[in-house]
Image (tube, rainbow, N blue to C red; front, side):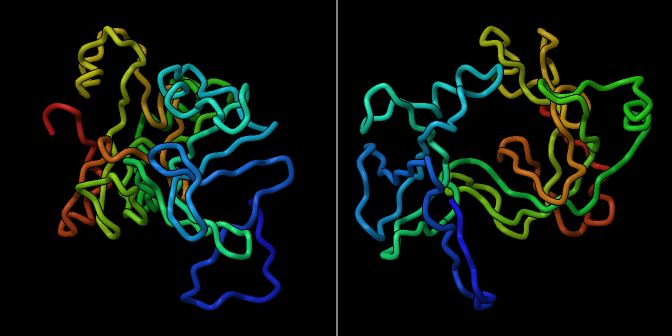
Length: 232
């Protein structure tokens, strides 16, 4: 989408995200895959020539998010997870997420010997398709937005993310049970270390299950906390 502003918006105004760009088709659908009426909230679905083929090395997620287009046989729709509604002027009003994702503002990122080794090309590997790796695997952040299915976090909470993430193999029982510290395939990823970018950014998005809430009383030492998936 695109939105042109000719003057600064009011401080409390809820801005639309604009109408679809050229060669992009947008549908706002209900839980049954039907178009919703004007002003009714639904999930934003994206279609068009620019649509990606899927997620790299994530066949299950690709099958979940890239679905058949019921309005154009042979085409596909991308289920964005974003919630919005059409306005009378033909623009879309963004209302949030409908998933377990959490948007986090980085407050502090810890740098340790591992990051030093990565910067000296001794350790670490970038994500597929990248020739660089964003470092920072120890982080303290503040929740700024949550999806509608997030149950245990809210805006303003402090969180620390886990570093290691599950491997894609269905037969790895440890990873399927969210105990990726015991992954026996070796194909896990680690934020800021192995095949996944780290937290050295102003904002990042993560899933609720990888975030551990932290008391505000521990704000000064929170960046030193690196939660495990089993013991902590």
